[in-house]
Image (tube, rainbow, N blue to C red; front, top):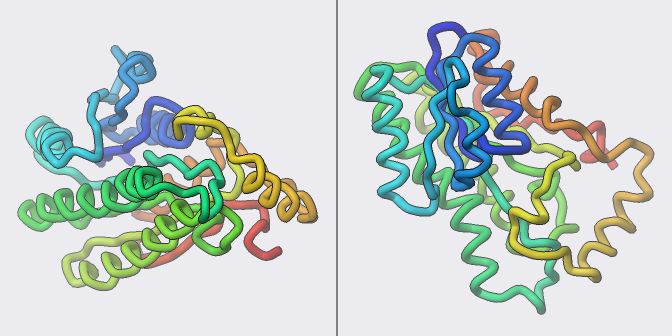
Length: 248
């Protein structure tokens, strides 16, 4: 990662924090983005990490955070779209328009807008960049709520479209689909899991022969590889980091 500049969303906690920490340890200059100001405070004074408070659902904040990276370091090599929420397993009949919109604004529209703005800068600066999206096991199955499942299915389509459409520019785009990861996504998603929807998910995943829950560092290590030059010939890949959940 030496000489690379990486922007990582959701960097105040969970998978985003673990990824930002690992990238900085490996020599990258990291723009650590989050809406959680208190969580971002842990990055103050940390070598090679620039914390930026931003709301990724606002286009002006997206412009500001990417411009900060470009102006400070002269380029942006890597974007990791990690920030996200889920729909707390709300079934279809209990899913409001407001929940649908909030999940899609953060999990799908924000990565689209961030990638569009970042790639524009990469092309202008002739940077052979990398976009990494964090999907979900829910991108492969239908046992979450419709908001989250649809957003993560859509993110796969976005990933593949960027990979194909931007390949001639030397820009790669890949996706990691985590399984269960030990994070505080319930709190970040703004409520409690729906008992019926969560009951369905637990009933299904509880029968799996594999341990469903991994650590945030498991995602960070996969991200490090896909964003490094060691993965220079990997484009449009959907990597399941789920201990085999997606095979069940």
